[in-house]
Image (cartoon, rainbow, N blue to C red):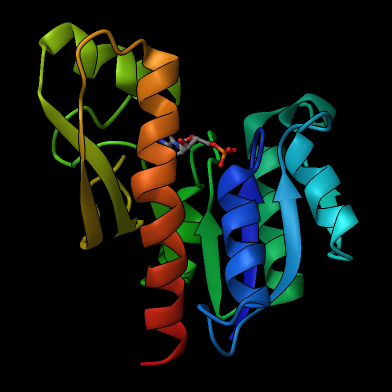
Length: 194
Ligand code: GAR
């Protein structure tokens, strides 16, 4: 299976995919390109260090959102991947792309959907909201992307304990280590191998 990974930031989930392919926990999969909306994303360095083609498509380089969306879809069409993986991609996927790649786009979200998801819930904000609500268990979800925000069919979830004294940063790290870096590679392996 040929996959494209879309990123915005640090790229630890991208790293988990790269490592999974290397150690064969993700079988029959190749990352053909990494696309970032942010030129400074460390994820692009991770791609380069691993000999993977990296590309930046930033809204800042286009006059309108429509033109940015068009460029993004064109790039994906050019690569024609079997699967598009949103690994910390904090940009809304154009409706045209969702329609074109139905059941071929997956996303990792750092909570147990339907908690703490939807518009405005991304990155650290998700963990801040979980701590403010006082939940004792949180986690991560891999799901197919549909036209809504975090509303598509769920593929895998994993729960993670919230501990006394957690800060958003500490909780984010635990959710990544115990859940995200486990279920995202696992979901890709499942999809690549029937
Ligand atoms: C991850 O925690 C991911 O689940 C989250 O952004 C972080 C990216 O980290 N994604 C969302 O919040 C999507 N709504 P990374 O760049 O180190 O993989």
